[in-house]
Length: 130
Image 1 (tube, rainbow, N blue to C red):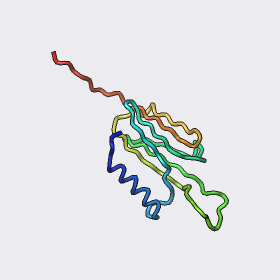
Image 2: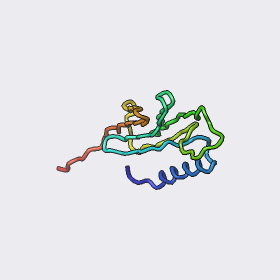
Image 3: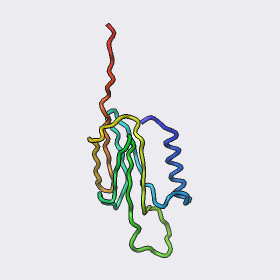
Image 4: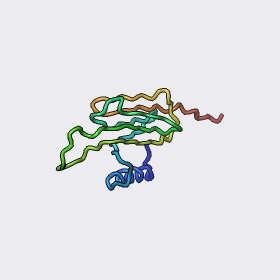
């Protein structure tokens, strides 16, 4: 996937707003999005979540991942360190190439959700000049 400075800035803004309390309550699971010649692959860290805790939607080449991680049932009065997020989360990814929506696959294994998004076949071809 080519470098997109705007996408990177928006991701940094989401993280900063969640750290400083200006974002909606929740957390942002870490994500790796890679682009290959024939597909996109999205890997999302969701330890402790079940398949039913996560929802995927696709609309106009925007893939949206939503879910919720409940807070721990036992909450101490004071944490020494708190890094694992909980609550609602939502992440959206605009895919630049046309995709085959019916062929998207998602699998949650060992706390990592892997989403494979096949690209649509290109209708372009090289035309030889005779």
